[in-house]
Image (tube, rainbow, N blue to C red; front, top):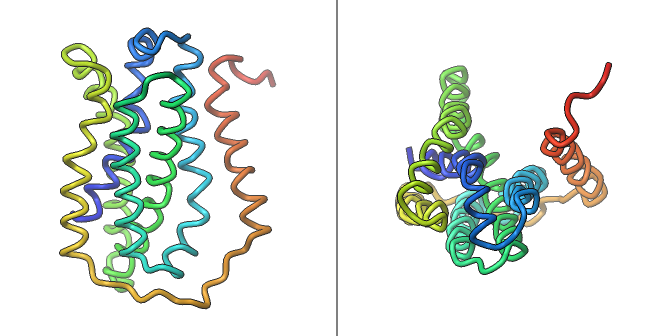
Length: 214
């Protein structure tokens, strides 16, 4: 439960902005196509930092990286709510995605280690639940917020969950010892992260061009 608090927010934020693009674009005096980059930038950053999570966990400790990533996600949410133009909002959403991308692999490692090799099927189902639940509920919550409050509350909703997640993680997660000899494959990262970003970019931009002819 400690880790799922953070994972649910990451899943929510992948779709919660979708229903607010029009309102957001009008509020920031920009076009809808520019506003859609608040979604694409988040997803691209989410995918690009995933390969770094394993090295960061080994080098600095999984608990420390989890808390740092969750804190980054919370700060980026607050900054996103205060954005004064679309470029700034996109930049803050990229920060959000970076925090979320570090959190997703770490929660899987924590749960698998906690299981000790037992009941892995149940553990994997528990991991996948937020990723299925979040994108479905996200637009519903986003629609309720847009219809009754300012679009900025879409990002403020992350703050109480982030604070709860930070407190729970600080008290409940076991400390992990960093390994100073952890090796980061710079060349592999330089190739893999842009490749993931390119694939995600193609998938997110496909809506503008329609299906690929066969």
